[in-house]
Length: 132
Figure 1 (cartoon, one colour):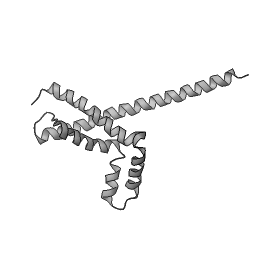
Figure 2 (tube, helix red, strand yellow):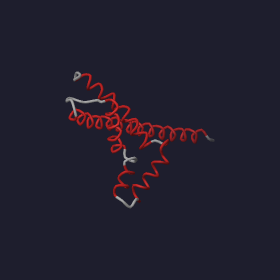
Figure 3 (cartoon, one colour):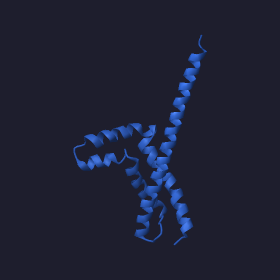
Figure 4 (cartoon, one colour):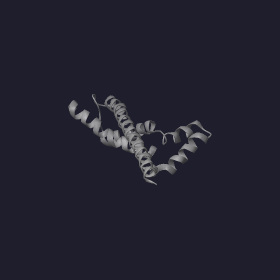
């Protein structure tokens, strides 16, 4: 078993790519068309299983659980305990930290967009003030 400092370091670093993948697939323009298809299928499919499967690709929180499972399998990261209990704790901790990162990122993006809009309004006001 590794030291708690090493485990916590792994927790906060491993959550970064999990958040990145989950956010990119569920929010960014590069995956817009597949996401729109998944949204349509999640709303209009006849079976519950099919609706839930496609919903998975539209929700960053839900999707982060599956990405976390993949990263746990690749890294064999365990937190606090060894064996399946360590994987379970690590999984939920990674999902929590990754979603915290995504929330911070969303707030930053929102603030940046607001700032850009305010700048554009000020620039337009400045242009109308200069016209004779």
